[in-house]
Image 1 (cartoon, rainbow, N blue to C red):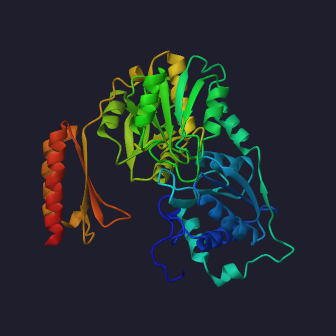
Image 2: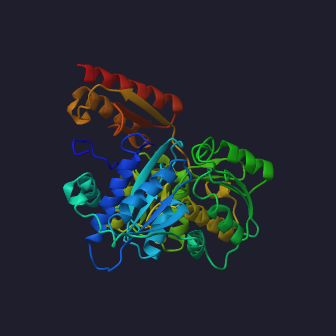
Image 3: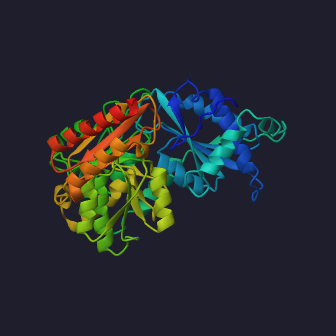
Length: 456
């Protein structure tokens, strides 16, 4: 493992196909030992404990047991909460005074994939430096020499009321004077981690709930359902005459909404709606919102019309959170529906985000389609170009010239972004503008110019 040069940790923990390196029980065992060793060494407590949660994937059992074995072998206790949303794991890590939390999930990916991500005792994802330290320990003599004596092993125990604690936390973020008694809601839990807590919290707040995607079998997580596939949800909303549809992803840190007419609201539209509401109540900090370079220009223009600005970061929710904390914002997120309300949560929370929108609907008495009627999404073209090498875009003069010409053509009514994929031998080209035909044509032109420049 020491010869494995590529960084094990990506932007969201360690991820890959289950039972294929790096997502193997052996690596999970070592990761468990390493995180226990790192946090055991921080002192300040006599007893150390680490929380483990997972989504509903078949491979979750394998990784849960391997991580628990690694952690307890270092003399640190393990608390297991079973299938639980990622944001619940983040909350419970802090609430139960744990040194760290470990979430086993590959989010919106198919069941064959899995991932392991870590949270600190403050509920935020671990800093790069701590992840690097954990990675450097894998397979090391230092780690082997840190194993606990047989009479100092850690204990593992299951926490049976973890879901109820999280439901209370969700309800605490919803106005006490507001009920969902007049609401009919269709909820799609993607056969994932929120299949129990999602229906419960909406029902306890008074809503009539029609739930789909609540029969996980280890293999059907995100399969034709959830945030990536809201079509079935939209059909159910129209069939049942529901006020709103809520789609979560496999670990429930993302949300996509469907209005009463079957229209789909992505993260950009939800950010716009919530920014307006928070501004009107005087609780929006930073005079704006943080989102990534992938958020639609429509969000930027919508916020400008509200007298607000958009601060963009690179792709990845951790970069959104970092910018929010650094610059004093309390609302941010991604077009994918990963939204962060920093006054309430330290990570994206699909159910909390949905409850924020439901509270706006309840207070205003307005339908969801009305609340987003002013949002104009700009047509967007996305192209992937296979590349043999990733020469910096700024060192390609013909590509730079083509970008400059296109930007001059688009003015402030369009946007161009070219970046290399972090995981594939591809460049990604994104163009936004006022017509579908125009952006497709420009994207293809830029793709041709890039291919020509890289083959020269």
